[in-house]
Image 1 (tube, rainbow, N blue to C red):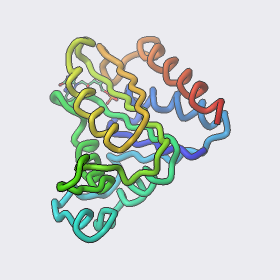
Image 2 (image 1 turned 180 degrees about the horizontal axis):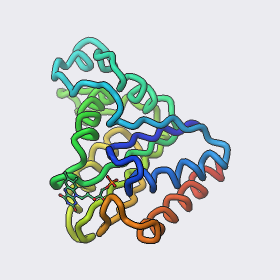
Image 3 (image 1 turned 90 degrees about the vertical axis):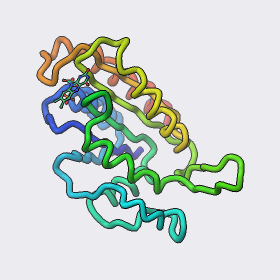
Amino acid sequence: MKIINILGSPRKKGTSIRIAKSFTDAAKELGASVDNFYLNGMNYSGCQGCNQCHIKFDHCVLKDDLTAVLNGMRTSEIAVFSSPVYMGDVSGQFKKFFDRTWSQVNTEYEKEPAFTSRLPKGKIAIFILCQADVEENHTDIVERYTRFFELFGYDLKVIRATGLSSGAPDEDVSSAQKKALELAHELIKDR
Ligand SMILES: Cc1cc2nc3c(=O)[nH]c(=O)nc-3n(C[C@H](O)[C@H](O)[C@H](O)COP(=O)(O)O)c2cc1C
């Protein structure tokens, strides 16, 4: 099984990367292969709005470090997407990547539905979102991004870690890490 792990936090020892690692470590033990993409260390442009991915091609025409990530979304069975909450949204690094996923849908405005996924069916996405604020706040972020993950056709699992700073002690992150580990066992054991 192939997994891609897209890391939206610049903090390598931060909360979201620790939770994503719990998932991928368990997945590797269960035999999966994992490709890690640490967005903060990659060179890529934001979407240029050229719409070539809809006018002429079925993929993004920009060639940079995101090309492998966008291809990986098509070839992996599970994609892990993680980000801290920055200013009421995902991190800038994650948003700049996410805009480029516009190339993962067909747009046929005269049809119903107007948008269909270009990803092969049957894929799973895990969205890990970490924030300092309480659980009741920032629920809109999950709702907004869920719409797009579902548009891509993913069976979506969400792990939120709330009330945590980036350097939160391991014992405070452990319940979200346990969730990630259990999810790895649940998703990978039957495949
Ligand atoms: C620039 C910046 C903006 C932030 N904005 C928010 C925010 O709007 N709401 C919130 O709950 N936490 C906010 N935080 C806190 C982070 O979301 C929190 O520390 C998170 O656990 C960090 O995750 P990470 O360790 O994976 O990077 C912000 C942190 C930074 C550095």
